Length: 115
Image 1 (cartoon, rainbow, N blue to C red):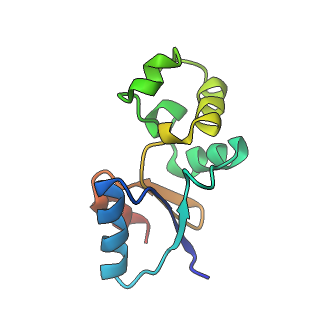
Image 2: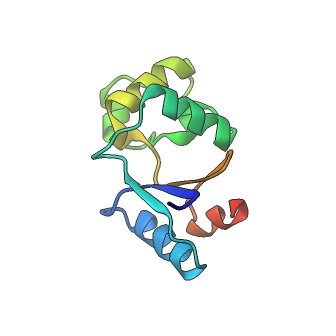
């Protein structure tokens, strides 16, 4: 099993580009289709720690669902984490993990820094 994990949405072009970039660099990551296998609040919290960002920085804040749910970027992290756990489509994609590090693949090349 690979020590690199990607939270992947195959319908997202950036997610597909990031997966291809990993593979081009000899990395065969463990692919977690996070919309089909949503992360728990604890996993999201761990991802935030690995990314070293607050919850809003890991969210698709321009997604209509974000505002439809009454969410704002300055809300308490716990509320935003709960929203991501309940609505995984709000999670920015893709996220690549290696060990205790993580990177959001926007742009895709950003993930190369943690390999």
